[in-house]
Amino acid sequence: MKTIFTLLFITISIQLLNAQTPVEKKLGAWYTVDGTHTLSDKISLTTGVQLRDYEVFDDINLIFFYAGINYKLTPKTTLSAGYYYIDVDKTFVIHNTPHLYENTIFEQIAYNHNLGKLPVYHKLRLENRFFSYLSKTFTEHRFRYCLGSKIKINDLLFINANNEFFANLQGDVFDENRLYGALGFNLSKSNNIQFGYMNQKIKGLNLHRLQIMLLIKTDLRKKQKTI
Image (cartoon, rainbow, N blue to C red):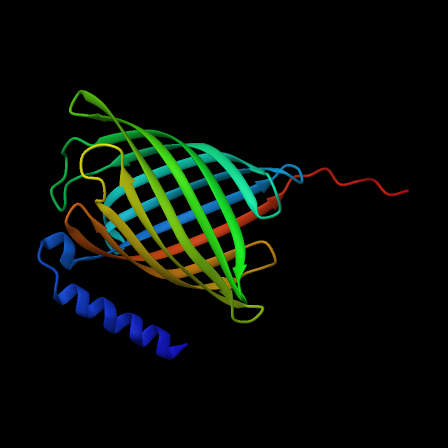
């Protein structure tokens, strides 16, 4: 485990030294609380909130709320639809400037399978994005595709790694990619916490972000009464 953290530290340090802009030179962070709430064998709800900082524990960049509904089509395939509300501070260091607000409706299909002994997950999402900025409104649409794997180390630890790219349906087609790796700790059978690093390439910027994510699962199905 020490080797993993050492390599992660060296990688981040090298990337930061090669950065070109003030934003790229800062190590930011994303903090997420994500909940999945099972209503039946096929239907569940997703809720969550995320805070993004330009620097670790400093200079808020973005506040993100989301909710969705999921339908398990097959044991390996899940369909989802949902909504985001995002408040974005587009400036770095400078404050009291207009924020950008985003309301987004999304549709997603997720598929899980094994490649040999390796568990693999795919997520394909369509986002319909509605923006408000400086008294103007505009609309954008994009696809997101995520390919990843969650690998069990033991009953306590696991590794989660994925890559997600974004394809716009207008303007520059490919302007964002996220490469992510995390070490996860199972707090219980239903809940876990992940500590990771993400390299985000977006609109010509090469950003480095620590990730702390708490995932909570609840089971709201009615328990059958026993006689």
